[in-house]
Structure formats: structure tokens, C-alpha cells
Image (cartoon, rainbow, N blue to C red; front, side, top):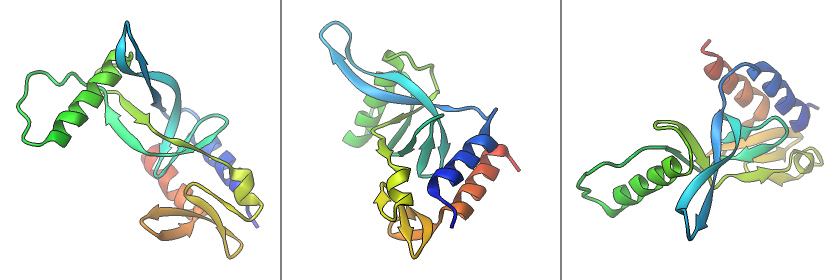
Length: 152
């Protein structure tokens, strides 16, 4: 049986040299206001984010941007623009991808037969929940996602 830990380690090795994307965290202060600051970087591998030593579940993905002067037809569009500006104010470069609201996954819990985030041991196979309630083996999922990142 292949473990989640070894599959994730193999993916990290394969991605060495591929650009990572920013991990952000919301901060608020009286002096600097609301902003999203950089706290690290990770490879974006589908529903997962791989850092050098952790695996995270994706949540919100945005691009740092200045909203400029625009009229918005929907309040949700105004809110997304404000979030993109928070990332810019927090130090991300214009157009840079930022991952916010991610959560830590425990691959050891999965290897022990349990689940953590979108990973679970299902019928003895490490699997990933990637679309609603659809599950697929993590090995094939990672292989496909790594190939996409490598541009093959």
C-alpha cells in the first residue's frame, strides 16, 4: 500500500524548480488597516497546496490587484475586488496569485486509515475528494496534476 506521505513527498520532488504561489493570511491593524500578508508559498496542485513540509487544502484563490474605479453590478464583485486590493496592500505584487483561508491536512492521520481535509483512506487506497463528493486515488490525481504543472 502506498502512503499519502510518500505520494506527497514524490510530488514535491517532481515539482522542484516549478514556481510556487503565495500563501496569505488576513491581518488587521489600526495603522495599516485590513490586508492579506504573505506567510509562505506553495505549489498549487488541484485541491491541495504543497509546501516544503506541509500539505494544505485550498480555499479562496485570488489575484492581487488594484480595483481602480469601476462600477459593480453585484455586491459579490465589489467584495472580490476589495479582497484583491487587500492582498496588494499586504505586499503581494499586482497580478500575483494568493491562496487565503487554506487549512492544514494531516497525512499521518490518512496513513493511519482516517481522513483529513480532502484526503482519506478508502478501501485501503489513499484517495482525494476533488469535485463535490467524487473520490479518486491520490496517486493518479497527483500524477495528472504534476504533469499539468510541468507543462507536459
